[in-house]
Each structure stands twice: as structure tokens, then as C-alpha cells.
Image (tube, rainbow, N blue to C red):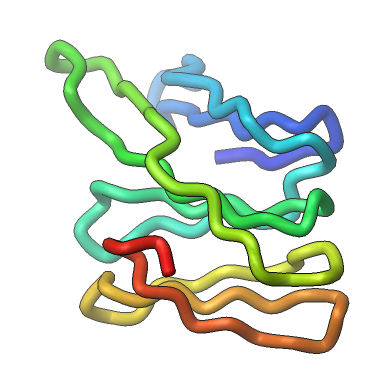
Length: 109
């Protein structure tokens, strides 16, 4: 997985090196990507002051499909970091505004 200044997150197959999907939605540089423990959700955070939750799945075998299911707003500064709790129910994000927020990853609150 790569996050970049072009506002995109690219998902790569580690074996073949083939691109498995592109996550689009952030308006500024993507700073961090985190996978939920079950591998069914991805969190991305950005200089646009948001975190986004993406679902993984729903594609034919051997392919990956990604859909943005939540946009988390609450930071006043760019968001630098993200980490899921061990049970995958919570997502912690850290921001340049000197705050950390713990979100309900399922409800998006």
C-alpha cells in the first residue's frame, strides 16, 4: 500500500507487484494508511483534515474492490496517523492540531 502527495492511495499485490486498486477521495496528500485487524477495512488520513474508512471486498476472486464508507471529520489540522484497536471497533487518529481522536470505526463517530 502506498499513500502519496497526489491524493491517492494505491493498493498493490505484494507477490506480483500489480496494482489491485486505487482509493480516491482525499483532497490533499494522504499521510498514512492502516488496515483493520480482520483486513476488511482500511483507514486513510490526510492533510485535508479528514480520515476515511474504506471497505474491502465484493470483487471476484483474485481482485480487490474498495469503497469509501465513511469520512471522519473532527480535526482542525492535517491528520498524520491512524491505528485500529485490536478488535477493529475503534480507530485512533492523531493530528497536527495536537489532538488525538478515538472513533467508533463501525458508526463513523
